[in-house]
Length: 221
Ligand code: CA
Image (cartoon, rainbow, N blue to C red; front, side, top):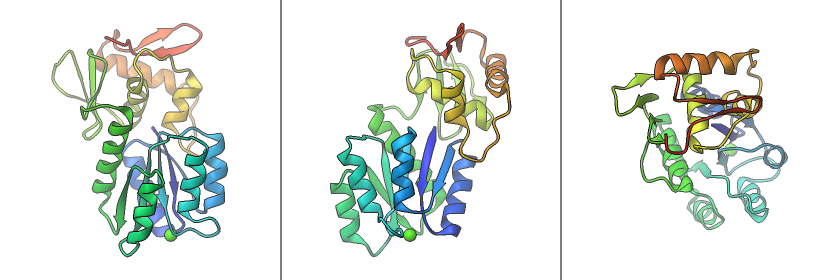
């Protein structure tokens, strides 16, 4: 999953970026509102984390412009404890939830998962197509209700990208987009290598290759 982090405080931004990376998100970090809007206009994100107090265009403006363009991207506000009015304006303006600074990274990650579930209309905390299930809290996969199988960070990111929409075919660049953030070097053949590793762990039938197009998990696996 690809995350846009909009935060001007370098220390908070770095801590969040690190936590997101550990949680297998591909992360792009921008530090002001205008860059955020430019970035949102040309890249699809699975979720946006938006600070409200930003130089230039503030977070509420970023939110309002984004929603005015009918962009339904899941959006979580990260803001200081004293800004009650801003939080209310943020929720009324179309934010999906907020976290108060200072916060624990584990809470931020749990709220992100909750927002992603709600926006995806998924009641279960797991991603599944019936054959394979993935627990985003532990990064464990199960196949045919078997025992849990631990995945590496990037194996998890790839399988999650496929399980968000079972039946949809994702190309190599679609998958790279969900696995690597800005500044992360994309190794050539990384996607093939990860698919090979996942098939070895989960069985060869879990991920289907659509020759010349990409990969998918079946809708009702
Ligand atoms: Ca700020």
